[in-house]
Length: 186
Image (cartoon, rainbow, N blue to C red; front, side, top):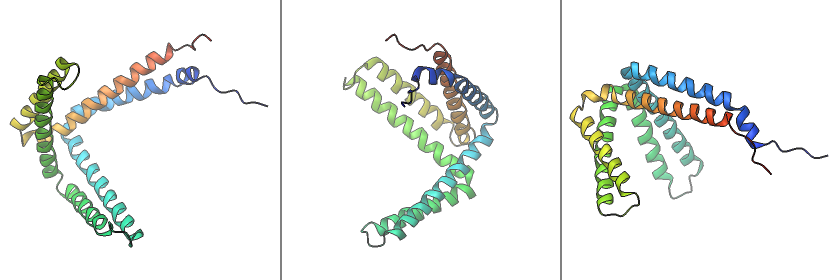
């Protein structure tokens, strides 16, 4: 007795309804995030805080489990720093958002400049797109920096909202394409 392997095209086509649902939900959540950017910014800082606390706990637990290891002290130190930062993010979410926003502004500026330099020096293929991408990153970084610290209240929420909308749209397009899938001719 042999089990028939499912046709992957049919499996994806049947799941297209779930892809569509996921896409619609993400687009709606993204629109809500764009409406309430301040709340989403605060929620993201609280979420990052809990992630850091969890990371710190895992590092400390790992260090205790491997006491004979040379990296014991480093694991403990990283765990304590992560936990400290996590608690700080939870107790000072607005200050954390300001620091995070400033970091992102500097990251976009540096990344944009490096992309432009790499494009001008022709160290990468598709030079035009690399330079355009670098210019967009540079302008975004400058815009964020010029509005800092006020941008800290809304930037993370806007960033998350736009990301959710684009990701949702991606799933909607995947669902649309999946519904048109047919098995290739043998």
